[in-house]
Image (cartoon, rainbow, N blue to C red; front, side, top):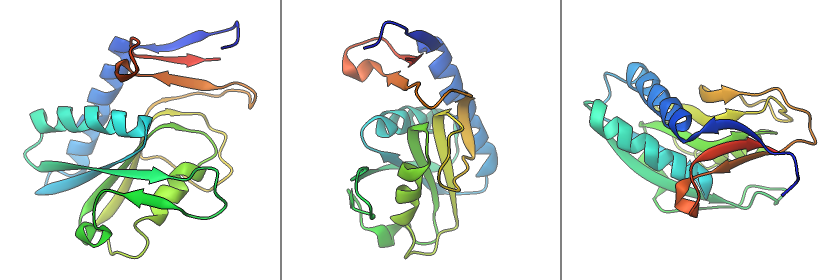
Length: 169
């Protein structure tokens, strides 16, 4: 890892961001009976799991976690999912990733749901870097950073054996 490592969010701040996003999702979906939270593997799924845990405590609707594994280096959509896409028909989907950089990952995530009619599709990222190459906007972001393209945002979650943190390196 490079010498320069700047702490952007600590463990407590990450949880505060996830809590705030959960309340925003609740406000946006208060009349729903179920929402599906689609986590993009690997770290987007960790954020989605935490979001689901908060929503399970505060929301009157049920939540279901689904996962999407994308071939991010592919030039076309190549995804593996742990659900039948048709199960998402006429449901609310919340697509979750850790960092929004170029927008390619979220765009590929959208692609999974293109052939089914959805009630609505919302996006969540912990960090929005504002370097979009794709016309992708996020509905809920923990923090928006204006960075230079050479910098990298590293999201570390305790599932990796380290304390939660977001670093700019």
